[in-house]
Length: 220
Image (cartoon, rainbow, N blue to C red; front, side, top):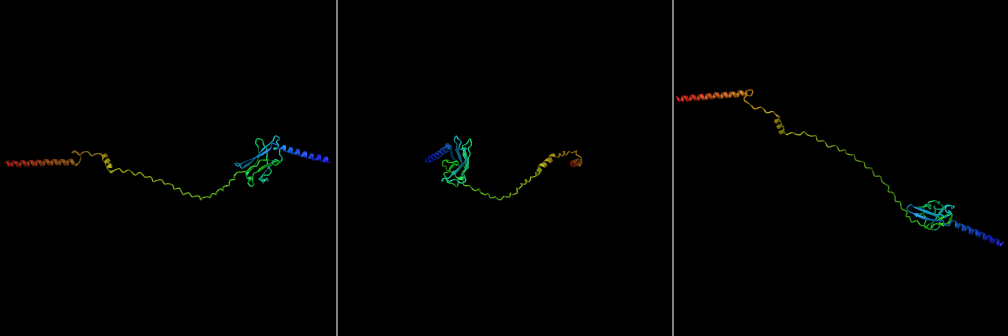
């Protein structure tokens, strides 16, 4: 009976040892790391699988983040992950989700808590939102009526005053000159001159006759 108990205990111990060894061997080569990208505000989880693809086949395929005390962070429990080809990124969470927790932090594989990342901190500065100033609507200024510039009065061209002297000169030059007066002109002017000549001849005759008479008397 005693031998039977000893054999049973040894068998159980062997099974547990074998299970632990197989379990440890199952996650051999599986690694999890974290990168904090403050520019995008993301905490990026990278996973390296082994040749047996144990990480890809993990069940459950979830992660849990813990704070500096080892307690689970609210909102970051059982976060789903996926192994894809072409990238080692298996999950991303927001930096903002860590604002109420104190670091350093860790991320664990829920399928086996022994598979975990190295401690990491988040040093991203959370910008204080600047309140947008409320624009006060300024009263719209009523535009003054546009004064239409009235056209300057056109100075009517006053007639150019022609100097009277010029007009007189033009009138004189344009007038036909009167013909010179000759003795043979028509009218009474010719007759008057003839009468004067005749009178002078008569008087001359009288004077000459009187003079002759006086000389003849004086000589007798």
